[in-house]
Amino acid sequence: MSTPARTPAAGLPRPVWPSRPVPPTAPGQAERTEQQDVRPRARAAAPPVPARPAAPVEAAPRVVPPPEVAPSEPAAEVPAEEIPLDPRSIARASLAAGRNRSLWWTMSGIVASVAVAFVTDAVVGSYVLALLLLASAVVRAVTPAPGPVAVSVRSKPLDVAVLATGALALAVLASLLPPA
Image 1 (cartoon, rainbow, N blue to C red):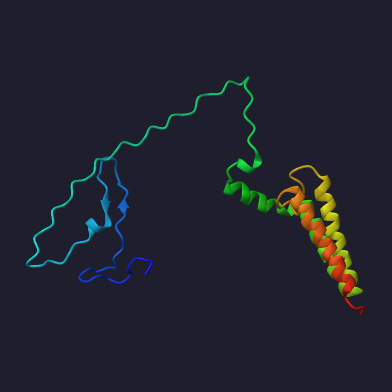
Image 2: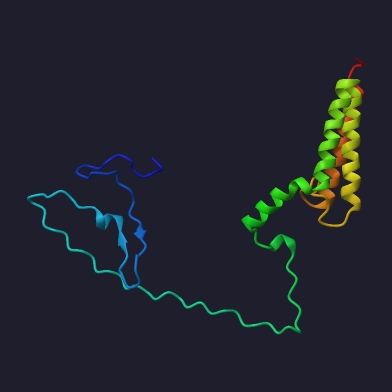
């Protein structure tokens, strides 16, 4: 069994879990473990177990603010891949997605290809979708970094290769469909 026992052990009122340290509630208190909190049933023959001496509590390290950088020195440029992610900025960006033109163009192209497929034929709708993929590949290839949000997923060469290959595969499959 790879997990700890989840059934009460003999004589204990709750499930047995491995002991883990409980953080102190105030500075200077010794750490306690869950096993120290468990009171064993009274047994006639068992002598009381002496408590272990508490480990000394070390003082928290003092946080020293970083030295001030002179205004004449330019700040080091951090690559976008190494900037830590901030959940709040991600949430703001997802809420602002409705104002992103590349998402609207991509969604409009998909809706147009589906509408063309319903109005005319599935083959023509597939060609329209292949043209949308090819146009997205060209836009991704010619725009500077970071590029349109709707088609910028990985590195630029990989995005262009995936979009162009998808457009080619869709056009080939559409040409193999029998006419309606």
